[in-house]
Length: 107
Image (cartoon, rainbow, N blue to C red; front, side, top):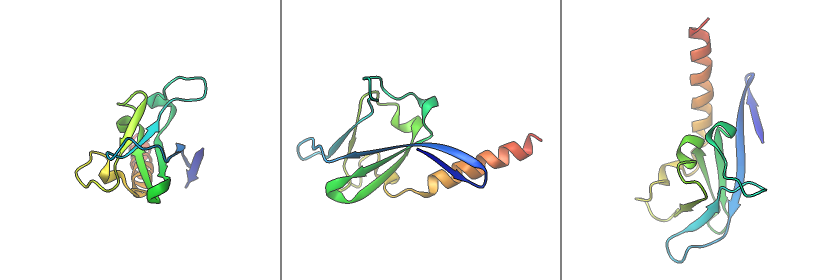
């Protein structure tokens, strides 16, 4: 999915999961149709919906693609490394604004 705001476009891959990894959390796969993992240059953000918890993670591609195939999300664990990305909708806006500042400084 592509999101546009103010003439800037962001590539967002929307995923969902209800697949548990025991008590540790939920597994989300980063395998595309055709079995290739996503590459950083293909996506700006992953918007991942954890169905049983009714929570969204908004994870930048440079963070998410460090894991080639799966990511483990644990919404109830505050110390989990992805916890700061829960409902982090503002990250996309910040990236868009930073991109716009960089473009105007280069002019």
